[in-house]
View: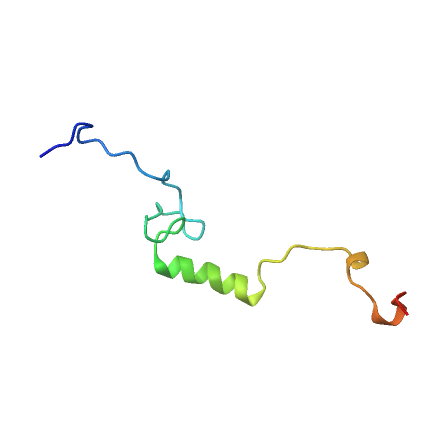
Length: 68
């Protein structure tokens, strides 16, 4: 039996393209299309492929540490 709202169900999230392969994303592996694409992305994070570049000023030099 149909509910008072009707047959139309509003999705929780908009469908997006998988960031790895471009296919439509699936609800169980959002924003990816499959567990494989999700694992590929996780491997890139863990192997250091995704790096935010910094300047050398942010890296403290232990030889010139002013704390004493």
